[in-house]
Image 1 (cartoon, rainbow, N blue to C red):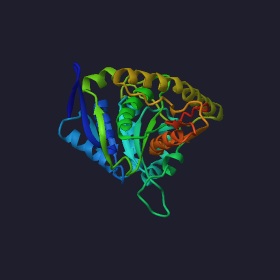
Image 2 (image 1 turned 135 degrees about the vertical axis):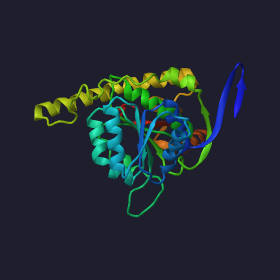
Image 3 (image 1 turned 60 degrees about the horizontal axis):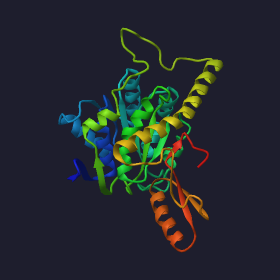
Image 4 (image 1 turned 180 degrees about the vertical axis):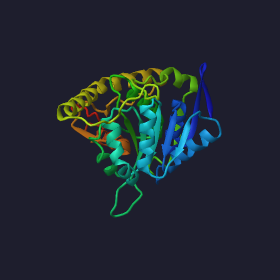
Length: 313
C-alpha cells in the first residue's frame, strides 16, 4: 500500500517476519542463496526461491541435501567473492554447527537468518534462544530483532556491517519463531534505489578464482592460530562502532532508530530497569509504561546485538 506524505511515497505491506526477512534479502541483491528447509524458517527460502525462479532476483539458488551442506555452499560462495545468504532454525543450526564455526573463524561476511526455536526434548516448534546461544562464540555477530519491521531493516544492515572490511565476519539475524516468523504486521519497504544507495555492491577482500588459487582453512601452527583468534577479537571490538554508524545512517535514511547495539526506552534514570531481548523487549516497554504510570519510574534496555556484546548498557 502506497501512502503519500508530503512529496514522498511510503510503501507499507502486511508481512510475516519470514516474508520481511526475505524481502530484505531480495533488496540486498545476494549472489548465492543456499538452503535446506526447516520449520519455522522454511517460508524465508521458499519466498527467495520463487523470487529467483520468477526473475525478480538475479541470484543462484542452491537446493542442498542438508543444513551442513547449506552452510558449506555459502562458505564457497563467500570465499569466491559473492554476497551469500542462508536461513535456518534450531535443529538445522545444530546440523550445520561445524560449518558455522568455519564461516565465523574463517572471517566470511555471510548473512544468515535464524528463526529461534527451542531444541528438544521436549519437542516444540515455539520460540527459545537455545539454538543461537549455543553458537554465541562461533565468530558470528548476532542481531536479535523485536518486530517484523526490524527484521527487514536488520537484514539489509547486516550485509553492510558484515562486509565492512574493518569487520568482515558473518552475522545472524535472529527472530522469534512463530511470534514473529508466522505473524503478519505492517512493514515499510524502501525502494530498490534507496537500498542500493545504502548498501553498495560487495567488494570482497579476497576472491578465490581458478587463475589465482589459494588455500582456505589450511593447517595452522599454534602461534598462527592465536593470531587469527586475536584478529577476530579485534574485529569484534571494531564492529561495535560500525554497527552504531550503520544504524545512524539507516536512521537518517528511514527515520527508524533501532538503537545500534542496545536500545533504550522509558525512564533513563528511573527506579527500575528491565533488560530484555527480542519480542520480550516490546512487552517490557508496555510493562515499563504501566509501572511508570503507577509511580515506579521504569526504563528498558533492549539488548539488540548480543555479539559483539556491549558491556555498558
